[in-house]
Length: 324
Ligand code: AHM
Ligand code: MG
Image (cartoon, rainbow, N blue to C red; front, side, top):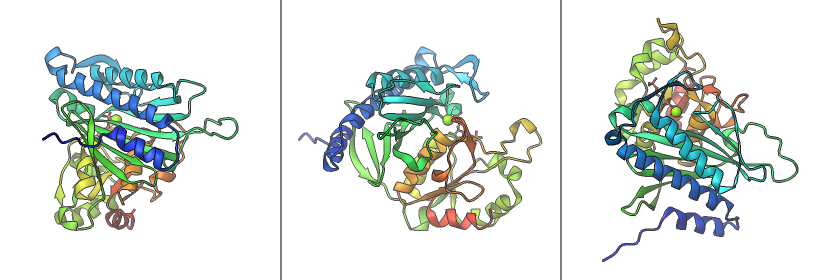
C-alpha cells in the first residue's frame, strides 16, 4: 500500500491558511527548498566529479574557499532572487549585503554551507537560514535584524536529507527527504527534559584557551554527560535538538598561536548563532552569549558580526550562565 506522507509544502500551506497569512512566504520557502535539493545533489556527486576541493580563494571571513562553498552560495542566491520575494540577503560567502528586489517582502540571512571542513570527507554539512520580514508599514529602514525578529529559521543537514524549521510561535519541526526529493513527515521537536540523553558539544582542542570560569565549569560537569562534536554546527545542533544538552563555542582568548584566538567567538551572529537560537527557543531551549545576553536580543552592528554561543537545554544554559 502507498503511504502518502504530508510534504513540507502541504504543511506550510495549512499553516499559512490557518493563520490567515499570504502565500508569499510559501513562494520564498519553495525557492529555499529548491536550493537545498540542488546543494544536496552537488554534494552527493561532488566527490566523483571532483568539486569537493579548494578554489584557491579566501572568503570574507579569511578562510580558504572550497568550490562547494561557492557553488552553494550561487545556488541559494539564484533561487531566492528568482522567488522575487527577497528585498536583501546576507550570505556568509559575500562581503556585502546582496540587494535583490526592492519590492521584496523578506530579508534572508544564510550560510549556504556550514561546517566546510567536513566537505572533503563527505561528512555532514548544513545550509542555515533565517528570515525576517521587511517593515510593511512605511518605508523600510534597512536596519540589521535581531534574531527575535525572525519569522522563521531553519537548517538542512546535507547530504543526510533532514530539514528542520522553526516558525515563530509555532514550534520547531523536522522533515525527512523521500525518494521523490520531497521533504515529508513533519515531526515536532521538543528538547527532552530527561537529562539521561543530554550531551555536551564543543571543540575540546580549545578548552584550555577559554575563560578560566568556563574551563573550570567543564572540568566539573563534563563527566555527567556524553560528549559529541561533529565540527558542523548544523549537524551538532541536529543531535542536540533530539538529545538535549549544551553546545558551546566560547571566546578563545589564550591560544599560543594568536591567529587562533577568537575574542568575540567564532560563529557568525546573523546566519549561524541567531538561526540555531531561534530554532532552539521554539523547541523549548535557550541561547546566550558569554555576557549572558540572549542571542535573540542581540542587534547586529555588522552583518558578519561574530558571537560567542551557549545553546541548548534551558536548565544547562542557566547553569553555565551562573559562572559567566
Ligand atoms: P564555517 O561556516 O566556515 O564552516 O564555520 C562554522 C563552523 C561551524 O559549523 C562549527 O560549529 C564550527 O565552525 C567549528 O569550528 P572549529 O573547527 O573551531 O571547531
Ligand atoms: Mg558557517
